[in-house]
Image (cartoon, rainbow, N blue to C red; front, side):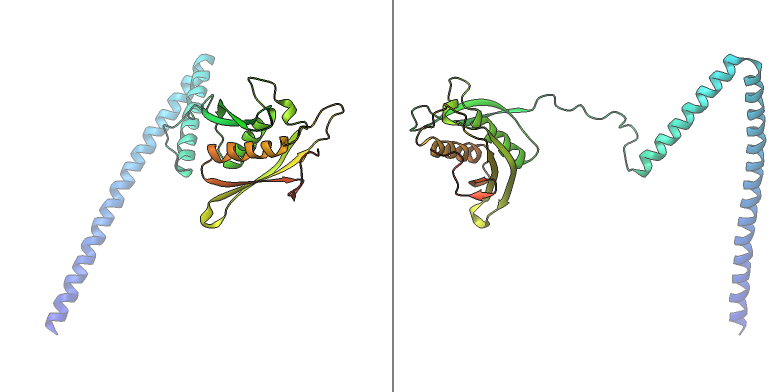
Amino acid sequence: MKRIKEIIGSAKKLVLDIAGVFEEFFKESEKFFNKYLVIMDALIKSVMALAASSVKERNRIWILSLSVLFCLDYAMYSYLTDKNIFDIFPSFPKLDDRQEMDIYIPSVDCKTVVKEKREVPVFDSEEKQAAYLFRLVARGSVFENTSMMVPVDLFVKRVWIYRSGAAGKACILDIEAGPIPENVPVYANSEVLFRKAIEKTIKTNIPSIKSVYLLDKGVPDRNLWDI
């Protein structure tokens, strides 16, 4: 029983000591804040008196106040968005991101496809890259006139790229072909070579794609132009 009373007495003394420490802390804090408020009050009065003394000083104080407010606002924004406070300016974008690629074009002999080296823009998605490569092949050679090998205007409506099991990715391009202009000859085997050139160009420059399919307005296995 005596031991319990000693423990209770020690606990009471400890509680009183802790309470005394907190009381002293709050008293010192109160003194500090009162002193701080007196200093701030004097500072504000001096600033107001300085601002009233001349228009130049008043404008300078307004500019400094707005600058401080802006800096605090930017610091709070950086903190809330988890952004580096010193990362003020964005990184400079690349003005031209090109890569040398092999572009295959149907030859005018209607028998083979020829390879041309081109500086081609690199896009952020395989779908955009495949559509751009298709347009390059459709435009023909930059060294000779091969426009007769693609007698119609071709428009890429949509591109799908999906993984086809272990065989790799498949690329499907939905194409819309315009009408064949009058007095424009259509050469035999031209569409076969064109499809071959498209497939070889896309598979060569996008190695993850293993097969290429062309649709005519969503319909597979239909000629893009008739002979």
